[in-house]
Amino acid sequence: MPFHVPPVNDEVSSIRAFLAQQQDAFRVVAHGLTNAEAGKARSASALTVGGLIKHVTQVQEHWLGTALAAPQRDSRKADPESHHDGFRFDGDLAAQLAAFDDVSARVLDAVDSLDLSTPVPVPEAPWFPKDVTWSVRWVWMHVIEELARHAGHADIIRESLDGAQMFSLGLARDGLGDLPFLKSWRREPVRFSRGVSTVRLHADDLVKATEWYSELLGAEPYFVQPEYVEWRVGPNRHELGILDRKYADDHNALGSVVYWEVEGLESAIADLLERGGSEHEPIRAGEAYRWASVIDPFGNVLGLMER
Image (tube, rainbow, N blue to C red; front, top):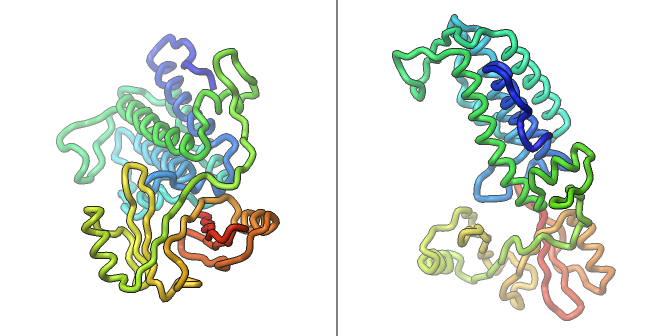
């Protein structure tokens, strides 16, 4: 992926070049990711790299159909459920990229073959304007806008995953090595933890504790179960949970447990046991997390959590 679009000589080559550049941004941002990493949300948003690639595949397919149908109206109807599902990563990054590559190539072929001035009827939907007509030119500009918007989202998510940035990823994907002013991306060795995931407190009266902390934090918990509640706190959305003490192992001794985010729960537990730790809480699983805890050689409880 060159850092800049190559020289262009006319309107069609300009549209094609800038579309191709924005399309390639998604291939670059996915370089080196595992399926698990492609499906990880790294902010308060639910967006993932894999989900964004799926979405822009769907977006390109939609607008390609609109351009190909012009000057007639595209007969396909908007499907809200399909739109929402378009952000949900299916778990197979290679398959998703193959689908993305296919529609991307067909879009570029259409840029070469369709008349830019062909009128495009505005789809019938409440979020579109009335009594106007677009053109194929407008459609391609809008696709560039959509790709650029979501490429920016993907950049932020990827950098939050492993610190990788677009230009460094581009060097690695294209096998160009390091530059004097820029290092090519390399996968770092897996560390024990990416940092603190959740701090878990305990209370004999969960209802009163929830009320107390809600007033203290100025917010209601975002996750509420009969035995457990959880808040996201501060600009980095750190998680603070309270567990009804009767559900905690060794509940008479526990004050709080810090859960560290790990990649590979079983291997992290094995590492701690080899270092003299002992099992405290066996592996358990919820809808989005797996967790366990180990007592270190000094009597402290180390919580481990895998998203």
